[in-house]
Image (cartoon, rainbow, N blue to C red; front, side, top):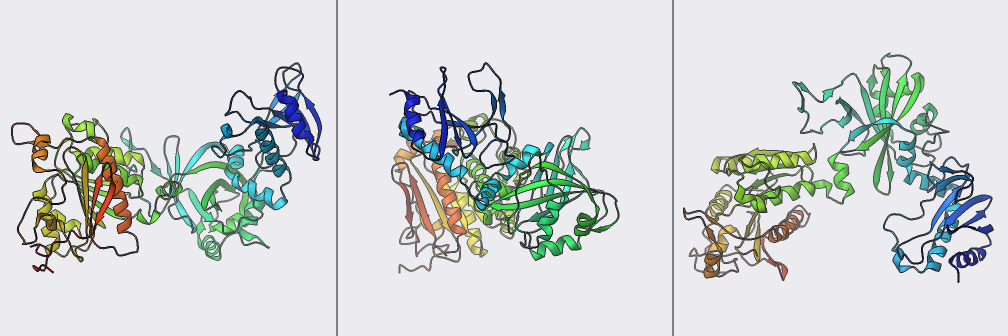
Length: 561
């Protein structure tokens, strides 16, 4: 049966649909009406499994209706489509439906069912759907330009500091430190703090009755007053109201941002409010009495808090301080992934320079050769986001530095290849009653095995336990799976005492993924014993809680119990 006739038969089965007509040219479309609203439907290509139904609202006069594009396009006479204005409908979220699984008939039915559901929305449902698309409508009517917003915790009202760049503006909450604040524009600072510009952020606690602006309605003084003084609905908290009542400003304009919580995501919309005088008064009084103009401005949340939360990172890790000892292959991958997984304060120690031999398995390749590795890491990691702070120390960690660092860090991660150094630091930390968790990480030659040892020194087990037999004698690391002969065959030597273990980047990725798992577990509430985690290519993770050696000269009780 002809595709258009099949689609028409489906539409005719719905009582709500009328005035059904088909195209008279090669373009396969059908026009129809629902409740005096006219639509045009382009049928999917039956020969293209991924194609879908496309529906347009024709000559629609509604200023704002959910899932209908605000901007349409006009079709004149003598065109393939009937004359009129066309606005596309957004019936599908990206990736929500696999069209290849649907037959032609099922695609038509699914699209029409979605359209009928849209047309039959209640007033409350329309409001909620418009709020989901609030920023789409807001930005559609906004002026040119954009303000970057750095809020951090978005649950409380706060004053924002304003910084101007050449063609940029930032509003930054107090307490947020940006690593590019000293950025230069020639001999001058690029970012200039404008203390004369007032900016405030206010979170909403109830969204009811708040709908986005359109090109016809805009947003003005009454809309702001409705949010602040809602008679039937308290849109803001008492704490927020008291805050803006106590804040005194002396300015002819103010940047004002509101935060609307939609599906656990705080959507921020921003405006510039102009006043008729610069007389000093409270924020709330200025809004109530002195507003002359409200200009809608595009804004975008750029803070590490919001970006981390959006991808599922744990925001409780943001202010944890991490010390990474060793910025070689494993250390560079560890640092790179830590900042992408919610840690923005990292200190890195390493005295080695980045050499050509390092670049194939160093996280950021060959840029920065000749620099100490921590400095190269800092360049790349701080470039990712201005709230990331890398304290780069271009020397090897020593006794005094370690004892100083444990006073301010929340976790230590050792990614150095020297067992002697790790044993030394292990004993130093135990002797000085280190109170923060430590992870020792290393990769065996060949890349088939890697290990992570999680140690809290108030619990049984330490790094030296792996080098101790049941009689207390020191031995080679018993956690390693590779036989000594195989290890010696794999080691690459430079003829002057230098060695390098061969392994590719696959084991680095596996090991860092396991490390992130360990770190998150450490900061969970449950109090887990120390353990050895072995990572293998075939078997995944193997956790061992029994690595503790009672005869260990560092942490043991020197008994065989």
